[in-house]
Length: 466
Image 1 (cartoon, one colour):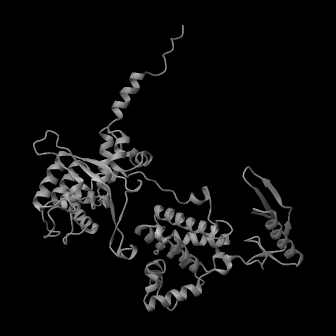
Image 2 (tube, rainbow, N blue to C red):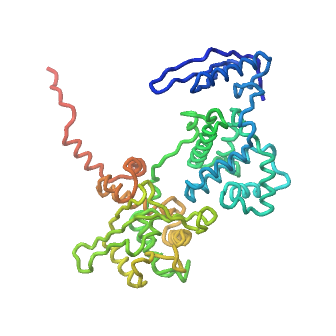
Image 3 (cartoon, rainbow, N blue to C red):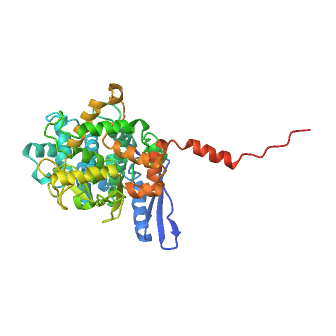
């Protein structure tokens, strides 16, 4: 802890605003300026008197905090582990299962970086598991097994105080730790950005609780200089019609990858061309509006109103693997309608008839009649890609994720000239996100745009000299 006796305390600065008056104590420690605002002059004078008394007694000031050595803050009295657990508990009821899981992962890496020493009596993997699966899980922590409880007691004894965040060098070390994978390689840009966002929320919570004076994390360009991400879809991941058709045809009937495969897996994958995966698994028969078989217009409609995320039973309040929630980015209870091509109408009508589904049934189900697991679809998709795509295409990003189906569909809508506002209504994105994500994939319109520019003319021709 670096200290100094180079301290100067200035007069209280009074600012009379439109709504209230603020009284700010100002002082300088080793050339660095510090400010502390108060709502009343009495509080400001009391704090200023404490600083002056400390200098009069010849007390050293901590350079990192700007405060006298004797002025122990809440951050010095509270361990990081205790604070992190409290932070998780305060937000637990407001978060969905996936958010809980991601926060636990980030806080685990941060807590390991804030240990006084590396564990010797416990395996590092066991420490990380105890933190991620038990310490930062409000529902499970009280029931932690004896061996896990022993690890957590050791972590609490060996955790640095929250005041460690007041040391800029320590902050850099922590950020480096959460930006690095266990194998020593840099984490993905999206992971680094997400981790910093989670820590920012924790630091703001510490500031509101007056555990820390200010948010110690880098701000502005300094905070994002090393973390650059993009929402844009990689054009290489998009499927052409022939590739998509070949994959879906391979998945259709029971196949070698799973002889007892449900007959409606092809239907399930087709649905994932449009809604998000967590929305597709929640569609019920009553949400499908099919035209009469003799109707001229054979387009169907899918009503999307619920998302069923697969997060793991340890992260839900119900103990179920899946968690139901409202649609992403939409108000509570809001729905949207997605059109279905006549080809999909025929498949859905035949599927409902073959399976003898009732209106309240899930449109496609797992073997036991419940929600179809995402792992089943992913396994089918991977097997189909390997079976129908040439090796060099299989090794490429083309259709590597099931979600690439949705990206392909939205890109096709835009390339077919569907107005972005309409695509937004069908897809459930915002216009800004839609264009930022898919703008690079829009193609085929350049010749028409060139003709429009030519028709509009260019600079007027100047008369030739002479």
